[in-house]
Image 1: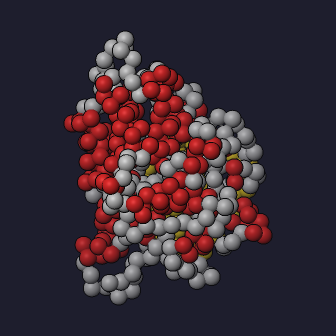
Image 2: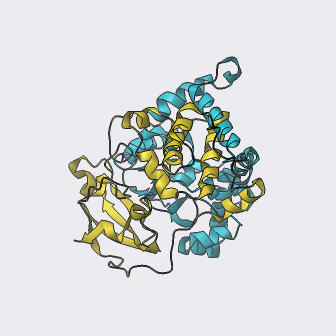
Image 3: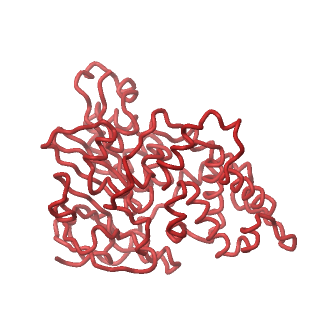
Length: 219
Length: 211
């Protein structure tokens, strides 16, 4: 979707403000928000791509106003209601429905380190055959889906070169909509700065973007 | 927007939180945890375990060990550049948001910078949770169009003839920058070198400097 989350190349957000000796969390609630989000994924009602798309679907003004973990909680609330873990009323009032049976959390404390150590690899041994080869010139397709895509707007329609073939990976654009993993080759594509930004390119070099087979066409 | 208004505001408040009423976000997350606990959807002790993992098990010291090994062991450097996931796993470092790693090496005429324009993808097992600036709209928007301007915000000015290579983490591949080993560190051992390697140098917004 052409949302505000797709920010590459936008102007007007001001300088980057590094913070010396930044704490891991600025507030306790940020740590709880992180942990709640990770733990709720244990219900397996959604995957990482679904949850990214849930954050993208926040109201654009809210998205821009919210801090990082507020964006997470906003997206999590949307998912919990859509996937039936909370009712709309529970999310709105933060009060449990007295009629709902008490459940058993899927993640036990002792399971957590191994779960995080394992992660969620997206490489797959089998997938569609590779349509492109390293060194080949390709164009990022000019697609504008209303759903999730990992093809950023700033590269669409631009010509680049395949630099790496990462092999078949779960196709995020499908996975985010529960359409299956549909693994296809994932490539790293080099776009020259001048190709992306024309005469306004403020640097000599390139931007390298990981794109799936479906995002690319021969150039 | 998120970071430089909201969070930066709180930065000034940090250390005085006990004197202030809790923010809306704090109240909301507290209420949510209470609700989810009451419904049996989360176990608060499991939440503690997640936080403990990110407070104690992962962080930029992990990445620094990898970089220092690459600086001192040519065979390891080759393995890291060939298959970073496997080379990093030699340190028993692996996991969520680092399942598929690629290491990219800086040189005298090449500087790598990592960003995620679409969200805030970041190599958690080697660098820990991302800093606020990495997740900020300012960084996500500008790194791909004006990386030299972004580096300037960090006080890093590169010679005009240095090529900049920006890696936008749009899939599940995570990138680790191997910074240049600074001159004058020939006598340091691997542990001493690791102590010099900053988080930002492994994202590409800083260089490593000799002590």
